[in-house]
Length: 115
Length: 112
Image (tube, rainbow over all chains, first blue to last red; front, side, top):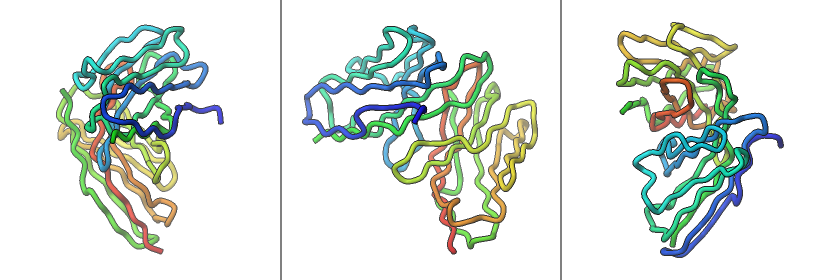
């Protein structure tokens, strides 16, 4: 599968623990996005990278959340001191470097359960 | 910020019938409107998109219409098949990157 890859697919953690997710975008895509999806809702934008630069962050991304894309390829999303409200599907997407809006390809997501 | 509303939340149709899902948006600066299909446990996949300089776009059984004045856009699926059963999300974005504002989704059930 040469699409967007996310790991792990599922993560169960105890409240207060830190978790880190990884996203590998489609190789030629320089734009990478993180979204969060809760049950019965559409995905909500969290943050956006162009190459290694984080260009926008949502207010949903509290101080406990940090995302990186150190070499402009894969990205990580870390949540510190997890809370039950962090339980959700975390989706990564990537798109091509065209100037206009283009198709964003989503990964299968990491489902986080905080117990 | 942009607000996208989607209706209905659930839609049940008989195989062969048409299905229509409607979305409204609030920010007139939005210029790109994709529709994603998400099957249970799978990733969202783009099925059709439309830009603000176009009023209608069709791809086989799927069509999307856009009314910029009224700020609403709709997905039309004709001759529905059981494999069309999924959750459909509309989205809107502006500018030149894919910061999408998604609707809350429509669960489509196509009964054989």
